[in-house]
Image 1 (cartoon, rainbow, N blue to C red):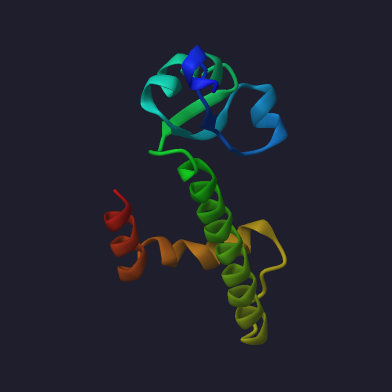
Image 2: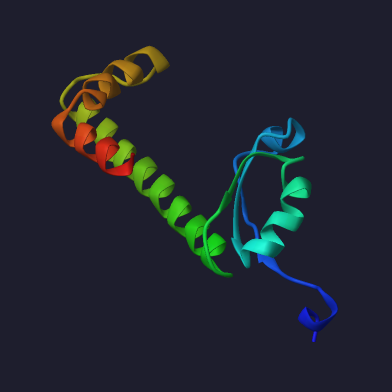
Length: 119
């Protein structure tokens, strides 16, 4: 019905914080018909620093769910790692120590494989 009148639809969930929103720095995970996306992209560019077209309608919401899953999985894993560090006598009660605990991971074999896979 709407398509016959030139209307279209995209799903476009947002990522980042309210501060990013105020500064126009959101990540916007849009999906839907490419022609409709191109029409609305100038509007999405206002609040969005990164506006992605991810495919067919619904792909934006699936990507947002995956993004949330990865973020929460990382937070859970980090909390467990810090618990192990505490148990081993490596204190992580300040930001500097926390950064020192994470630094070796950034140079690990696994991290290198993940970042290469994601590129």
